[in-house]
Image (cartoon, rainbow, N blue to C red; front, side):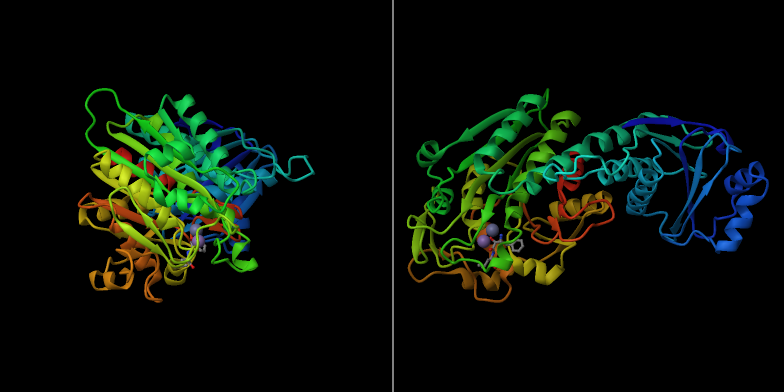
Length: 491
Ligand code: BES
Ligand code: MN
Ligand code: ZN
């Protein structure tokens, strides 16, 4: 998609569809009056007939019958939240859908008032994200939608300042990273296997000039990745441990580790899931997909920090060779874990990656995982749980999530619950006391990070959506990529 910034009068803009976003009550502003004058008064008459007052979600689509250089007008109500960047992302999705329906290839947006760069970038981000679809397995190959191929951002005196160029560039590069994560998640588990993920990661590294390292079972054994090997025992698919590194030119300000759960299919193992709860378990590599998507973007945006991605990847399957409830794993750092439920496998493979990240002397570790159903019970499907041992890091991630339009909510690492994961035969066990399951999972991970500032993002809810969201169709959402990119760029 071609993106342009220009300064022009609203009645001079030439496009297939001209989008005029309006805050509630702003429906009779200068731009509307200018357009109305060019249309011989027909626009305001229509607005008053339809009761348009620019409430959230209200829209008016108006053909100009060649009285204006733009073919169609779309007045878009922003409601009372015009100051919220997320409103712009969602409005962009509405305009995008309308444009596709109108076969409009060239879309122009007219901003009556000066807007922060972040809002203009959000329009670009929302447009690119809502253009995503996953239809490679549909037999009907005729495109259902006409793609918008150019997007003009127009406003009185709007100029492409350095800050605006940067913001738009970041949006243009971030959206494909989100879409990459969505593709990896949406791909069926029999295709998107650990070795497939590793191949995709290697490709990302090659294209972006990143260093890639992929371990198969034998190097995993040498590296004592006990959790990953234990979970992989039940599967005929070989596990992979994926590591990608971006190193900036000059001195790195910080070393950031991004850890993502890459469980390509979670059947539960011998602690087998029910058929219903298995239906979407190809999603269980979303944390890994998110981290890989973010690395693709980071390679292009070139921040001044070192970023290393760690993605332990395996299937969790029941079989004659699968790990059994009661088995004990000994990790490289000496910690022993009693596996009481083979379905609490994510924490087992993440532990190996966290140990590695600590060994590599990361200054900050952020892990993303579809870790617990309990987190979905607590926060629903649109909000991720944020566990953190460092207030500054927690505040930074909350702020980045807000800017990115990705919702996080802090959950506590309750010290008193540490007793719940004590084992009678090993140091700890992989399940807690029954309730507070998201916290038990986080407390388990905390055992492996020492004093390193660390955040655990439980994305079990928002990683996948059962029905279409404003700018994400059903399936993998790529949730987390935008927050990670913003965080890394802000350090
Ligand atoms: N991958 C699941 C968590 C999950 C559930 C993700 C629903 C997305 C949607 C995880 O491996 C799991 O099975 N967790 C168990 C933990 C329990 C056995 C302690 C769970 O949540 O039931
Ligand atoms: Mn599981
Ligand atoms: Zn899982």
